[in-house]
Length: 477
Image (cartoon, helix red, strand yellow):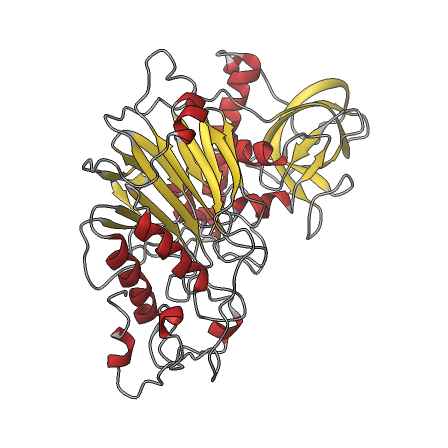
């Protein structure tokens, strides 16, 4: 039995839970009783089923998903500004319009420079680019940012290219009729080649969106490491019993990994019962502490636990990037991380976020004959060098702080692994030498999922191929 069971009952004037089957509601807030009679626990069809597999078949077939060794794991935050990571002392939503313009200008300049080096070579200063609205019947090249002419997703009639002229705002409508395939999204910096015979419509003949990327260095691990990755929400959308989380904890009790990665939301502010203030007899912070205490007590101190904040958590700062959440008690093996994060674990670099940037981009992009949407969306992040390159952000969904994002949301190096939780169907991919994992949601109407993977020490002859030293699965909870 988990040790935190009676913690919430110590609060005065707390409503007790339903007496029947307390063990099934260990993670519930103190005031929540699912029903007044013994409830039937929800069961998920296919529990334990492997729904996705990627990696070396030998590693997977011989996998010991529970930790076989206990190496000391050091966790270093690589997303820093002036030598410091994002912390709870950071100020947010103080950036002025002029600051936002400066941030956007710096981003456009840096990406444009990389695109020009890819297209023209090193001597980019010898080539003169045209303004986006130049009137010409000859092919020219121009650089700008993709935007929509109206609210909503891009389409062939609404796509604009906004130039980077500091003296005035120059815009032109884009026509992709001469292109066999196209994939663009709002906020994307691109280099376009084409003609503008009337001055108001740029007919695109070729679009350059990818820069030269440096592949991640192979991880220099001395010992094998096992991981489990789960993404919130952790309870079903019609209760606060946290059955999916309890099922995950049961799995972890029998299969303790070297590293456990948990991304929020834990106390989802979008949950209808949270909105109704069901947890009124204990604070959201207390409720979150209870959840973490239960997980930590079960997993123990041999497993390193990484907890990624979410702006959707009721007790978190409602801003992106999101400051790390806090615990009143310090644990040597628990690391509270901001969203997003880029961490180094014994030479293995892992990118982490709890924000569904993939779904945000894919619902706003214009894509025609563009191929695999997952690979495409992940490449957007790498080539735009950002965990959240979409601009403007999804309306009424995310409070985006451009100043914090310019400091703490950059992808200056491709990690060995990147965790991208999403409402999109769970997946595993290798993209530009990086293992990309969407573990799915732990609580899902079709059955929650989580990911587990193993990284083995690399063979110098095969270290350039991640497929050779990883084994990864997505499993139903």
